[in-house]
Image 1 (tube, rainbow, N blue to C red):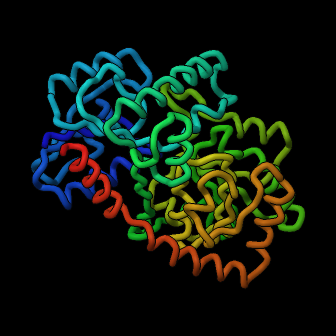
Image 2 (cartoon, rainbow, N blue to C red; image 1 turned 30 degrees about the vertical axis):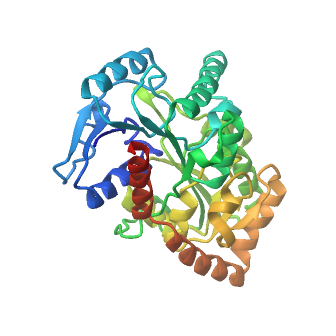
Length: 366
């Protein structure tokens, strides 16, 4: 087969899924021919080592007219036997065989306060149509958790049997850590990821301020990009924290994987306060590095983190602070979480995910 993989998100937080998929497909498939579609800026981001994988420029922004018509034209020119859209956004007029990965339904349920309200609501309206439409136009759907599978099947009125769950995995453990000097010899809580409203960062900051009454030197470290295209701020949490008079909060901006691995290894607790997730990869990465994890009990997180996290109600700041404090002050609990986390992450494998995805490709082509 000629298989096109829409990898336009490859250089993003969600893009780790796409990059790992391609990396492991290269190892197991020398039979099919692959076209890896990326934005112009990412033409050199991933370099295949397998001769049947080829990078193709597809410089079309998501949710744009260029995506609807430019990407459509490109796909019609390539004439693949199958397209894997790694995100729901795709040309709705494309008629070739395709499968789609739906990571979560967060767009349909949330509003980000750092976005223009009208534009965001219009995007959400378009998103609802696209999410529903692709459930029926795609030959098969892939999701990263059973929770997302069930939620999506209910929303789109399709049978769960049309959806294959392929869990993601943590793989930072082979990276040699590099100290992040501003945090050396500091005691800190850690969060890694986007800071959209549904990530619930402001409640985490409030919980941290409570904890500083008992742990006055405790920092809260928030790792993630602070600006997008042309330097436009992605989040307003830093300004909000200043207005609240909060202290001890560190915004690092983006950290490379080696410094990120160091942060995971040296944090007092990894905190994941999200209100909704389709999978939630950072807690697994933290577990693999040996960090104890305190997590929200919302949506898919108990499914993904199992008994290797200490759970709190993400809407209750007091409960969040109390459960994080348990991890900070209870040595037996910390030992349990660290041991359970290292055992738990062995259940997840990017290689297995790639094999399952290849099986979807092959079943779809029959």
